[in-house]
Amino acid sequence: MTERPVVSISFFRFSRIPARIWALYMMGRARLSLPSVPGIGFWKLCGSGSGEGFTPLPNTAVFAILATWPDEQTARQQIDTAPIFAKYHRKASESWTIFLETASVRGVWSGDTPFHPTGQKITGPLAALTRATVKPSLALKFWRRVPDISQMIGSDENVAFKIGIGEVPLLHQVTFSLWPDANAMAAFARMNGPHAAAIRAVRDEDWFAEELYARFAILGDTGSWEGASPLEKLELHA
Image (cartoon, rainbow, N blue to C red; front, side):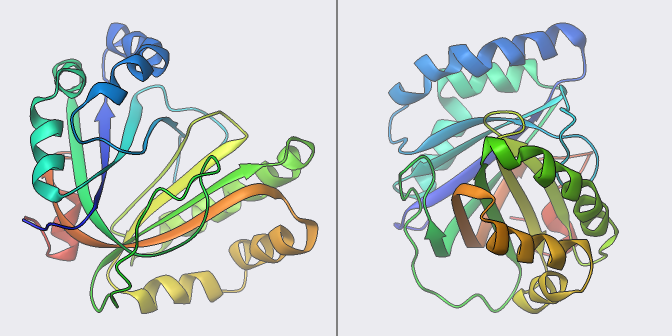
């Protein structure tokens, strides 16, 4: 087990309506419990968007908890045994957690720098996370672009997993994806089309009040998503 700081993202799927109502309620209630989990550092409760990647339409069946930990052993132990995580596992019809080590990061999240990069060069599969606070006056313009970008991400055969999550609907958005290598991810980012146009607009029109970009080495996972580990597509299943 690594001794270095670890980031975990736990995804929970709630199939039944009562469980979905519970998950919505916990978006407020779990804020009281997460700070007391031993070893937990920065954390965020997130809902999700429907469709490929990220859309403004919520998916009430999927929620996520992102957290930082001092090491992988602590992360695995607390996600497996801490009462608040145990409640989510009991209610969820399916859950999957991925464990990550930060390779590089720039920007801030809620005014904080939550991830501590190792500076290592990733030569194989990696995870990418982008997070932004959209300026309210530009939210409509931003969300007009996103469906086209999401469709492109969903059709890219190199993407092993992709999801859009967020803390506040429409204004706070996070995209998380798994790629076979940095070249495949860079090729998508450079591709002419909606994604490249949106990147230019972000810079030219200053859409975001806050933004963060991070790349991670993949340490392993636990659980399943849609019946299997997404890491199987990357031949990295722990």
